[in-house]
Image 1 (tube, rainbow, N blue to C red):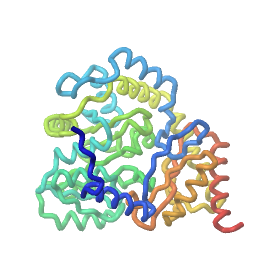
Image 2: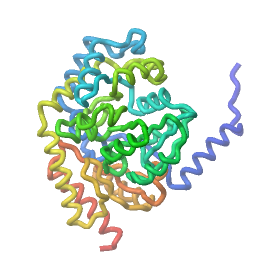
Image 3: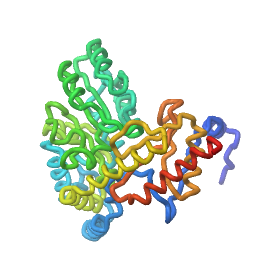
Image 4: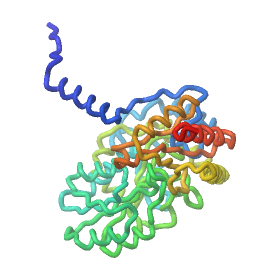
Length: 387
């Protein structure tokens, strides 16, 4: 016997009210299906590897060889030779003894913090850290003390006041909405002076920064300086998933205690195979990083000449600061009418009053495509000024 749902139930009323609140605040989010002919200045495929024919062919061959999925968790029967090889290659890339694969970057951050922290752990986070880092500490029952963005003096004061025995400093490597980089040397020295561990989420630096694409930490800092290093595979490497790199003891601890690793199906083996191919291209084609950084410089120069309000950033993430939420949405829609995709970012992703367009550059962008973007931005600016 079927029962008609009660449209006036408390749950239905609550859902409707939450939706109304977000719409009234101008914060309603919608997914957009990217069509052919769009210029993508919104995604994180910084080296253009997601559409590289070699990576695609390797993924297809991996699926034929190992199947569409791993079929089980790593600790049951889902850990295959291709996963083992990928972990070894990733560890070598960033100069660490071991690496451990996770399904997503979000899951990696949650897994590390849940496995290492509890209510007796003091966690110190940069105010602009990614949501997964904040959520991970919260789920672990640890209190996050948030220091001012890139402010080592503020971090030092917070650490000095802490009485907890175990202290963990956590920061993005490259900040995902601002595009600026953490002071790794300063963070490492400050953490060490207070006998704290340091965790860096280098999601947006891996493959882009470092002399070999090893990121803003990589081989430049050892396990004593940066004991916990997180990287993602779905950005510059163009595939999907994430990893944690560190000492033998750290990785074995995560295998035992990280719930996001223990209780989830392993990464599809074809994705692991594709990532191995992406790592080979990263190693053999440093010119991709050279082109990427040339494109960043070209865009910034053109934007400066047009007096566009770019924030300071030398990474592929180029924030155009518009401050007002409605203004950011209006500019994004106008760019969309030109078949140009950019990210319109507003609260709660960024603080109130700091709405922006998040523009991202790729190694595969052509100069005429960047010119097209700048021309469209100039048009947005001219419309607002009435000229």
